[in-house]
Image (tube, rainbow, N blue to C red; front, side, top):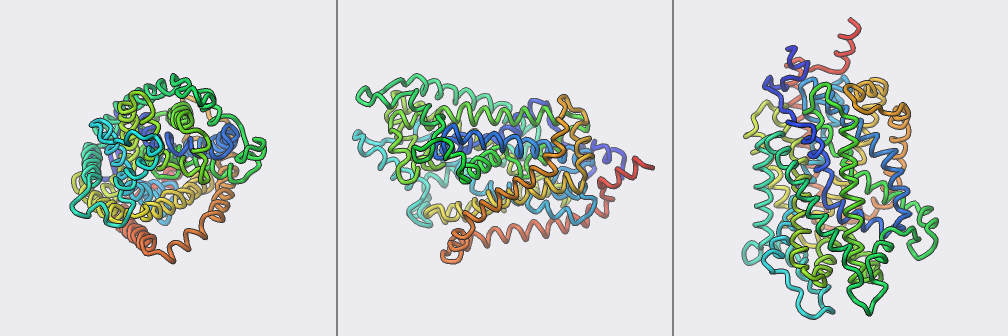
Length: 552
């Protein structure tokens, strides 16, 4: 093994290693991977349905005990693997574990972001389509306010093909198909350009534009006052109170909400997914850092940026605006179905913009911002698989992009065809985008703190650090985080698994979706087996080799 490869100056293929161009670039890229639809749509809905301000107590507990500790561990693991010349989760996990079998944890590290991309790029196309409709004035809900909601729902169902499988291809391809092809092309053009010229270059431009768009919409919401004088209670302050005042789910004391296990489950799930831990993305992104680049302050800054978009922007725009025009009774009807992620974003908010003066332009800014947020996230979902294909199979960028493009095009096409009631999308999101993420995060924590060793992990994190990690972090990441994750995961399974299993057993589309998941998992496993043989022939460097060098 050459000295350059051991020092991380070249990749496992012996070529000059890709690296981030600037520190700001990597921070914005990691923040961009986390900032997405969940910040602006899922978070406010979860908070409003689970005690408002009371929801923020378990939210910040999970942030401190789970999200930040695992975030630092992932940054450290990625940079450590990158210093050995590797950028993919299978190789990095193998290095950390010191044995080939740990590479197979990387099945999840490659599979999760790749499969999430398959449906996320379609939601991205929804955002682009809605932005276009607002720009050209094509989203018209009529002149009768009593029909705004029903017409908005009708437009959404038609646009995304909710009515039946194959609806988007009946009598010719529907507009969403072309928007999906456009978003697909944009993503793969940027990912082909590489880490610095593609991902970083886009994120350093897109993130500020997203912030500007969000601040413009926020300013409009906070200056709405009381639009309808006949409904004086529906004003800005009351709308903010509906979102943030601690309260019980049924109007009881906020303590009731805090004592409800469902509140803790919802809060932990939200912060967990919001910070993008357990996706395999941060591990990959951090591997492009230099050996002594800071990961502590950079990781914290990326996380803080995500929280700004989520709490300060997402928490102040969507629910308060909807409350001002539609009222709390409408939003919480049918168990809060109007503030679910998709219904809030694509059914409820168009009604809000219809009432709002200048709503057409604010609607365009809003959905264009969501589109940019989705692109910064979807790019991060492609790079882990690209890195694995390149260093695992020894192929170039063009070949890896082509292979990944064909795989993801098949998956997205499957979801696009089986669009009825979003069953295919929902099934893949449940298993890959939720359950598997919990599993990978727990495995990462065990690998980092128990196999690699928490003391070595702490030393690795502090290498080049511009901020000292408190010593208690070692105890938290080794004992508290895995225990907390395990408890939440068991509770989540208890609450959700029986219904999902029954759905798969009785319905065709969810069953077919599980076959697609299984096929991708088998494919990635086979590829890791092939890559392992190649790496072993090259003289794979593990963390144990480093320890032997230190003691010799």
